[in-house]
Image (cartoon, rainbow, N blue to C red; front, side, top):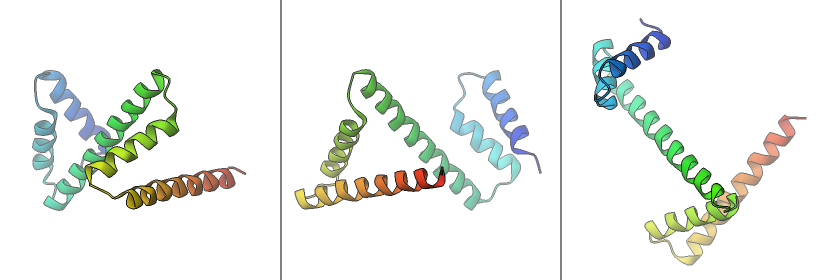
Length: 116
């Protein structure tokens, strides 16, 4: 079985050789060539979707910060957009914001105690 580095190098070489190629199609062809199971392909696709979503949100945050918006303000705005998208009531929106704030606090506490 090929190593991750050799698979990645092969994919990058394919894309470099044909810059107009569709990255998803190149990756799908490589997965087929390697005989990756349907479950493995699904996992890879889900992972890729998560990474793309993370990159998109990070880019949005960076743009907002460049415009002088605070991180807290940006997060609150994003949560409100999510709440509106899913037609949450005011109570559900408040609960969402509270849950996210609590998770952030717990994450920060864990990070601080692990660093000691």
